[in-house]
Length: 223
Image 1 (tube, rainbow, N blue to C red):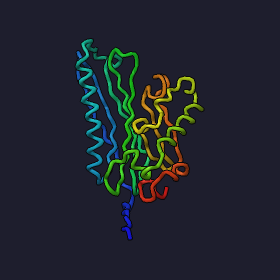
Image 2 (cartoon, rainbow, N blue to C red):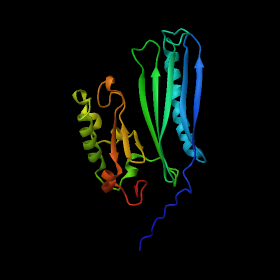
Image 3 (spheres, helix red, strand yellow):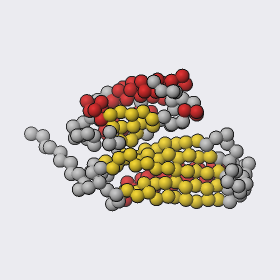
């Protein structure tokens, strides 16, 4: 007889606060940054993962600014900047899920650029959940996610500019996913499924439609 795995849920959903990493530099390479960062009470390892990611993006931003030979003035309109906004999409006794959106502008550029990063953690194990962790082994989840994503995108205002390869059945295409109380959301990066003008579009899936693909004891069990 095989052993039954018992998952122990937290007694209550953890508290989440938002901290901000801030800094600035002066001319000739003036810049400023403010990056919001969710922090989960009692979960230092998770918090360290998110903080490390944010700090790496800040280091990369500052390096790009300081390598720019054009220089900048002190006015806000000329200053390079990095802004990060965080959103908590789910907090319960089993899972926390966060979306971070970075907007980066380098002085002299035609427009800012955005990057989306999602973090989803299993509170019972402390593990960051990759997309395959949500589904039962062997489930054709990528084919389903791709088909439904393309259906939604083709029904949107972006249909004439759609780049279908960006939503094809590959794990990296769906890496920026978040869980919510109603289902799963996938946000595509700039230029992934269309030109800059369409931004970072999001497609949605309900738990009901994903249920046949979900494991019986995984992080989505019972949803």
